[in-house]
Length: 117
Image (cartoon, rainbow, N blue to C red; front, side, top):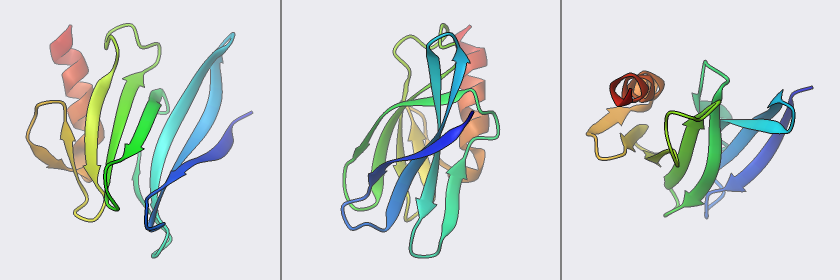
């Protein structure tokens, strides 16, 4: 059964990282992330493909969030991809790539997977 866990809050409490946790295989857990704006009670970002998993999240400031992501089963991304999300601006930096809108983040990560093969 899927369950939602709160992983962290931004230093000012404005943003929250939640994950939907599900067991993809025997003891293989996926933590599908979503980012919530608590002031407006809106979801800033959520993957449509639930196989994207959050390995680590670190708040760099009140609005900047660094995450390490992999896509289950994770065998094509090594240690994962580092993404820095600017919650206030609704943008992200994927690895060494250019700044993109959160609305295209999942597509950009999928393209990184294809190019990495």
